Length: 302
Image (cartoon, rainbow, N blue to C red):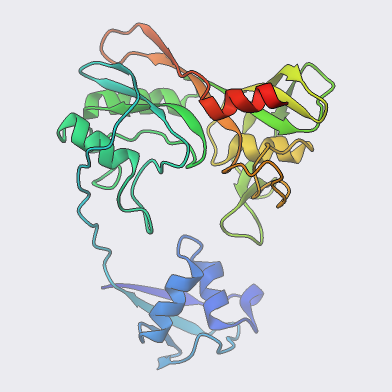
């Protein structure tokens, strides 16, 4: 058990206990905190109470949270579309619908399960047992190139390049609406959505710097095909940035319209190019993933 002691602040005065805890512990989900309250692991002023109990400024909250136990992640014989591989790096073309690493609700069938099988466990361990070899990720419904590091030396070298924003990352996307200018730059910080915890948003108060360069590749009657180059790699960056200027990604029912007339599975976004300095050779290495069939068919249809 790990003990956390908190004091209700003025902005939580009059809130439900679970909401107050959620505001003070944003890294924990509200449902998880409700479970801990129900199981008696949360005391309000020394007493076990319900999640709906209203708190007052100055109230003392004590949480005894169970230590997290990381589950064993098993190798799985899942076919991989390998774009490049050597002793240090593995570049994979991730398909739509595949989660990058195990998490609640997705403990199997992930890219990590497949890579563990392919590499025989020879992967960097810097990010722990849940994310072996994973130095960056792309969304479940985003397709395209992703690099996996086979050892800690390669991981540190690639992570350093990510940190200084020197890695080449180019995406192809289809957006709703016709973009009239040929190119543009979106420079707007991204952080958690103020009210919807699972979403990101342009957040000037609490967000982190985010810069996306976009260029129109082709215009259609009601859509545009664009290339996006990232200077930074914030969660859902392209999806949030394009929505912020009025051009949400086609199929993105989270940041765009909930209507999905083309019956697409998630956003139309493809990580086409990934380029970096090889950790061992010191030479620039660039890998490209071809557009998936569904994307090419959409372009022909439009």
